Length: 101
Image (cartoon, rainbow, N blue to C red):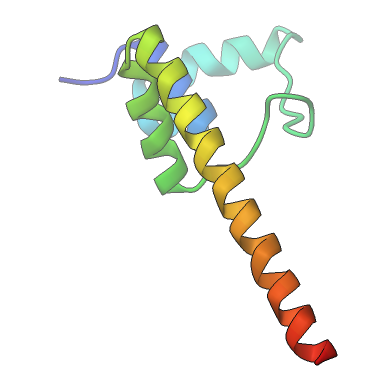
């Protein structure tokens, strides 16, 4: 089934492509929106970031999770990140000790 308009707009934002690249039938509508003076193609502002396909996959999977699972996943990822930071700091400290011996 084709993407509905809302989904096409959301995916186009995530993938940083024009909506009509996903749904060519939206070309007239999007041209109308762009000519209305409210369209902003400045992607440098807050909330805009180029994402890889892997990151887009992760975002799409995250979006389907229940809110409670989203929070658990965020907490788990933050915890893992802290463990990686700590392990990296320990490796740096060990290398420094070896150099000083």
